[in-house]
Image (cartoon, rainbow, N blue to C red; front, top):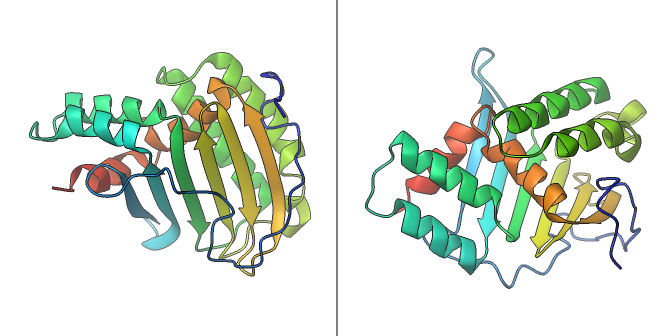
Length: 214
């Protein structure tokens, strides 16, 4: 079932809950292994010295080959890092897992999301329309967090396959609170750009982890 480009992530596909909290509810068989296939990192708010989230990103073989071509043997110059970040954002075969280590309220999540996606737009990673769609749709899409908030152990899971982006929000106990899908280059690029754009809190440590591999 294809969903329209407009209404980013707005059309809901209610799918079966996942019993195992550790297993992603996706087929990951097309993802690559080895150098340049992905990265893992832990985000720390340095002024508080507090770990707030872990992030895992994995790519398919096509993206892996492109990243290897851009980075292997070329050091970690700004030009290389910028090229790798943009290539990662262009991936059409990827898996992302963001796990929250601390809880916070819905207003903070909404504000952080707006800030991050706005920075991706200002950096030229996404179009203005994509930024505006996220801002418009986020309060409705994640309305289930308005009272509950984000809790430690919750996870946001994303799977990109071609032009399809599927998003799952799952609690630490494995309960699926959101399972949605959207079609088009805009949604998938927006999600990846929120991590790889230069002004993202994830940008530097994520690239450090990705490029540190032999």
